[in-house]
View (spheres, rainbow, N blue to C red):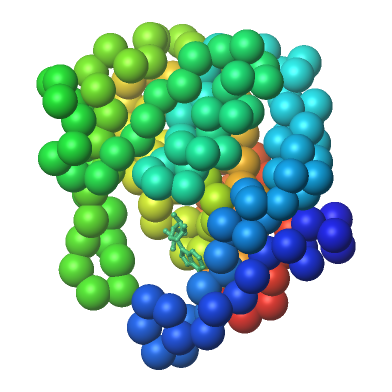
Length: 176
Ligand code: AMP
């Protein structure tokens, strides 16, 4: 996976000083890299009886939609507060300063559906945890939570595993 790792650009001090932003747009823009990353993930979940893929705004939409297409299943967008036009349910989660909220349309997943959760990166796991709460409150079963990048030092994957869910990431980066 070293080749995929090398395609992810690191931008220091974005969006604020001290953060190493792991920018996956360089991987998305690389035809062989994007194809390989999506092929690996689609192959991983091909036999996993996934009913739907849920992606977290915004980069989780790009990856999640490609994976859903590859699996031949539907896609559910988990959006930032106030963006969904229909009736929505939401889950608040803590940021370093303040809180944020993700929302999902009522009826987007059905009770008992097997849902794969996708985002580009897991750091503290706060966003993924909120997404899991939203999906499970709607009656979904989480097949796995899936990322391009894990930042293990921030212990997000540990946090999600403690909740009883599997975490899979194609690559890891040191630091945060
Ligand atoms: P967290 O809730 O702390 O796991 O943060 C995950 C969310 O924030 C994901 O949607 C990521 O896209 C974004 N994110 C957090 N840290 C980084 C980082 N160092 N580089 C790029 N994206 C990040």
